[in-house]
Image: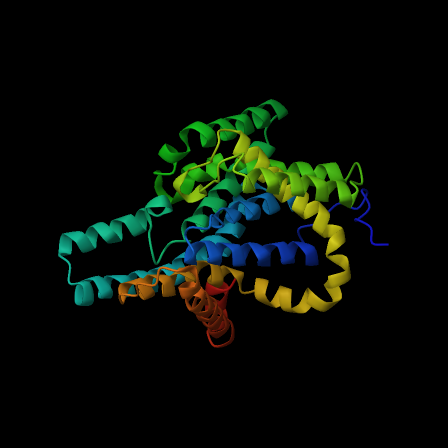
Length: 332
């Protein structure tokens, strides 16, 4: 009988866990699906990465060291892929769209501002700066008193619930980063809980089903983190957090019989996750710029396949052809 990791075995961010990689892979597919079929609200699953960051949290690191290490993992690829993509965008605007200089400069300014204002092909770039800032914020409050920590998480929940859309207008997603601290706290809380008790997997599965039911029946409104829409105030954040936590806890057991079969392909794909997340919107941007007018859901299946192939191929090229210093920037 498969069992969850014993409660005395603390999870480590230095070790790869197959079920966590599998959750990451599913979330990446959900994000791509949500960008191709915009009527399906699946891009919200970026929040699961934030919960996983809390779940894998390691205490005791210095704030400056944390910021520097995460900068290399998150901001280097943001710049490494973003700069050439911005050059391509400017070329397209000047020579093909033939818009005026002032409009080109406005577009460049919105890209540099980032966050919610950065549109296609930079659709997914906001996440990398937002999670970098949120990691720094969370590192800071975990080094303060329990009172400061509690107040900060409460303010994060309130800010996202009632002022999320205003805060989303701040540059580089820094406002959404603060509102997302509650997701870090939720993941961290599960990590701590699992060091004290062993939660039966079927309980986690029941909680997962309950949260999915509430979302599917629109008992709580969907969230769109990029634009600062945190759905039904407070309740959506809590229900979506419960979904992710129950998913993590149940997959720890349910994934075990599949791990031997899926471990290598899942780890391979997740190793390409950064460029896949950053670059999959590029074919969507190109597709619509060349006048594609497909409206039915079935019409978008080829676009979905192209998005995956395009981003994976570029990731593989960067990983295998680019010099080592470039690989550290593009595929950290």
